[in-house]
Length: 432
Figure: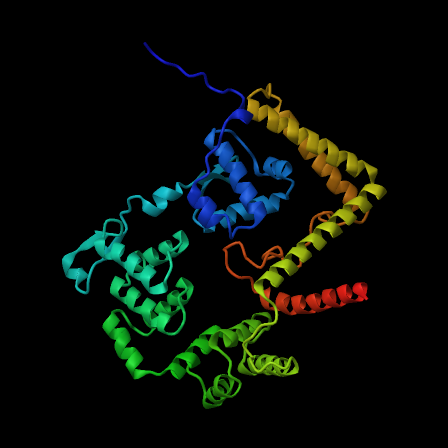
């Protein structure tokens, strides 16, 4: 006797799988629209259905540029792989969704040196190497928490790609913890600094630390933050001594001031010194002796970014309604494009497009071209109805496509402080 289970034919009634690793490790830090693109694309990939970036943008209510930005982001995060091909002289790419469980825990042929004399003992693999496994446990105990998948990949990169010995990685983690720093990013910066100075073993690191003092490290770190590879001059050393000793700044706060030089043509110490002096004066005006205390919390900064995005959305909707009033045909074009996109999507999902797919796409392209002509003929920019973000690098989220903190954050923090004070004053006035 054989048993056969009836297959569900309606696509809408079937289920798609999203790995828990993605939900726990990738989703929390990702911009919302990028998550929408990933999940929507993963659904089509799971059932082998065709989808274009243009159609996906229509269905999700976002721009094609945002879809492309999302694929770039997920490629940088290691969640997808772009497979490029040439179609009629035009280079395009397909998206391959990577198995995240296999990427983290599967087999790997990446070689790693084991022990101080690894060159004599041959190479072993990262996965299955007991020394590397023990390293993860020891680092977790050192930093006092479980490592995320991103942090695990970073450590694997040190050992496998940079050929850094596990004992040196652990020694560096312990060294950083003694100085109150347990982030993998901070440990990475210390390892890079040591590598530049020829440190390849834990013994080398111990000798280097014994020969140098903390102040030398501070000098070097500030110079690196400003993009200099030279040693500090005596005048610069005196200036930095004043920051740390007289003003009482922490290294993180000084590095934040150095980050302000990203917007000027030639980073220099005088600019950083002026920033730090202004912060000191501001702290005194607040009646606080702690120059390292920031007046804007991360929660308040996120709230300000939310406000900026909401404001940008309202302004885009206002511009759209303006265009609709002046050019009624564009409103009709947008309605028709939405209907055509929805019908095309439903047809593809059910597999019953009746061969009308190319025809519908052509109609949508014609409508898009007509829309662009109408806008330009009426002295509007083609992106006039799009959302215009304050910062195009992070789209007013504070996080770039690569997952890094955006360079606009310091400036937004200053704006957020003013915005908070104005909001509080307004609330107080309303209560009065």
